[in-house]
Each structure stands twice: as structure tokens, then as C-alpha cells.
Image (cartoon, one colour):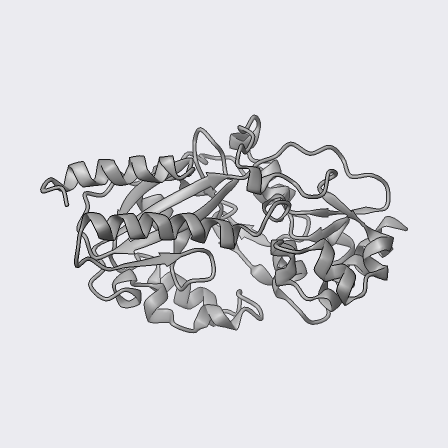
Length: 312
């Protein structure tokens, strides 16, 4: 291990870039500054049926509880933006992050390589990898690591790349010098707030998941409120509206990672075809896809809503 923590931090950043991460930064593994804010948000029920968010609360709000002895968090991000044309008639749109291979698997594979490399450089140190589903406040950590700030739509925004970012972390017991936190550049802009068709962004930096199209079409397995169904429009899985209107996404770079290239040329799925799918069709079409995090009955529920909306 390098005797100089600054040298080791520089080596960590270079290794992460060599592994294909577009952005990398280091945050201190300290308790969340938003612990009470998160507690109030959960108590208000804004997480809907995502009950897992209320579990492991202490771990979620303190990295050192998730990995005992954690001193630093290496935050990495990959640009996943791909330009898309308007979907053909009769198609339902898919959120961009789910168009390629399942990023959970793809990101974890790289992060485990980074974690293994780090432990070799610092024998006796411990690491833990986190991607999306781990009890880690990724967006706060990304901001602390200088990756980007949490925008008014609650997405992490990088001033150069925009917000089309997949996030992942390596928690470590090594004390590494942290990067400067990202500063907020949203200013007086409220395009994301005004563009949200369901009013899920209830104010700057405030999201009510119960009205969010991404939540409704991915996380919520029950019936969708009839008043919200027309606003889902042609979104079959997820939603990108609040990112598409963001000024920092007006000319984003295109993702170069082969695993993130769309497996569906149009970035969409034929509605009538999905409605005819059986389990075997679903499994074949969505092999290694993040869309499979939604079961076929829920996907077909979404598809029927889109089909009804397309007839309006």
C-alpha cells in the first residue's frame, strides 16, 4: 500500500477510469446530513409501497453501520445516455437506463474488481460494494464525492455530463482524502417541476414517489389510480421526462459502453406483442435486462394502460 493516502486516492481514481467508469470521487463515510429529512419523508408515506426503504434505516443513513469501520466511500458513475428517435406507432417507451443489459450486474462486476484491487493494495482493509439496492444513500454520497449535485428532480446532475448517470459505490475502511462536494447549479430553473405530468415533484428537491411514473410502473405492483393512468401516456417501464427537460442534458455525450447500448432498436416495445407474451416470451426477450425486475403481470398491467392511452 502507498504510504501516501493522496497517492492511493489518485491510484483509485485511475483504476476506476481504467475499469470504464466515467466519473469517480471519494466521500467521507459519515452519518447522513439528511437522516431526519428521510425519516419525515418516510413517515409521510411518500415512499408508497417501497417498504424496504424503511428497513435497515440506521445502515441506510450511516455507511459505518453498513460496513463497520468504514472511513471512505469511493463513488463511481457511468453515463448511460443514448439518443433515441420517437417510438413507432403502437409502441411503449422504456426508460433509458433499462435499454441495455441489467446495470446492477454490470456495475457490480466492475466495482468488485475495484474492491479486490484496493484490498490487495491495502492488506487487512475491508470493502463493501453497493449498487442501487444496497442500504446506501447513493445520491448524497455522490454529491459529497463531487460527482454531481442532487437536482430539483432529485437526480444527480453533473455539470458536464448531465444526469444520465448510473451510480455505484465501494465502501472501505481505508481513510482516503475526500473530494470537494459538488455545488448546486439548478438556480431558479424549474423545468423538471413544471414538466412532470403527474405532479410527483411537489417542490424543489421534493418527490412524492406515489405519483411518480417510474415508481408506478416499476415499484408499485398494485392497481394504479385511474386519475394517474392517462398521465402515464406511453411509458411502459419507467420515465425520463424530468431528465429530458433538464438544461444540463441538452447535449449529453453518448454512452460508449457496449453493455448499455439498447437491445431494442427503437428504445420501445410493441404494445400488442407484449400483451400476447407468455412467461417464456418474457424470459427470452428480457434475458439479462433490468426490465425483468418487474414481473410479467405487472409489465402487462403497464402495457394495457399504455394501449388504452394510445387509443385516446
